[in-house]
Image (cartoon, rainbow, N blue to C red; front, side):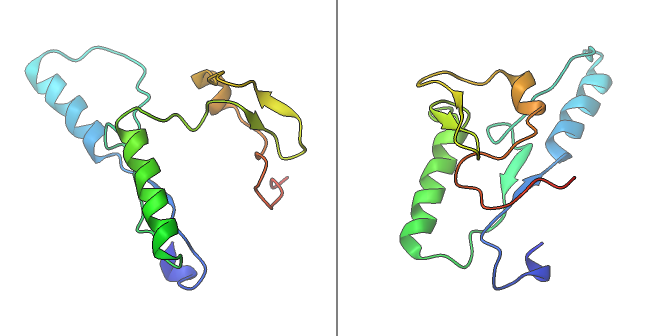
Length: 118
């Protein structure tokens, strides 16, 4: 996406289906494939970060440090306290959002300066 906004994009998540397809095809070839729900993330290589751009070096270093913690499962961005954009509490201190709630989020959190499309 940076080619569309080279001076304004900071980063973006990238869904990388490659590792998932390789795992699933290999399981079929090995005869071990079973139907299952997959909720892959950074640790699995299913979600990666685009390059960090248009930000000071210290901000980039902080973002990279959080990314590393997410990959190592030492940080979950869906752990409270988390407030919705309107200021209401979504997650209490230490509460972790269940996967189903994350999948069905229809709101922005505090600090996001935008509106959801209708």
